[in-house]
Figure (cartoon, rainbow, N blue to C red):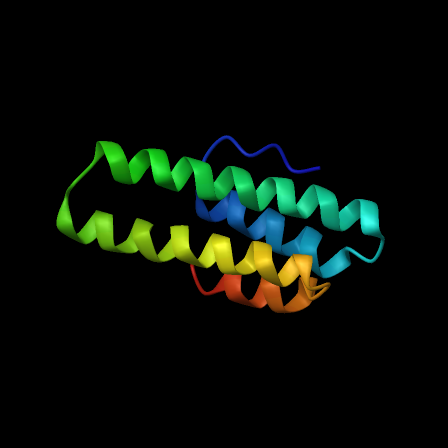
Length: 88
C-alpha cells in the first residue's frame, strides 16, 4: 500500500505504478483507498487555498482522483493509472 501524505508527483507516480501492477481484488481495494486519500487531501487544499491557478490545477486533480477511483471500482486499474499520469 502506498502511504499517501500528499498529492505530489512522486505520490501520484507511485499510485499509478501500483495500479498498473494490481490484479487481485485486495490490491484494488488498496488502490481505491489511496485514491480516496488523494481526493480528500485535494479537497482540504481547495477549501484552504483560493489562489486561482493553483486552485484550478488542484480542482482538476480532485475530479481526476474521483474518476480514477470509479475506474478501479469498474476493475479498470490500468485506465485509472493512465488518467492519474495526466497530472504528472
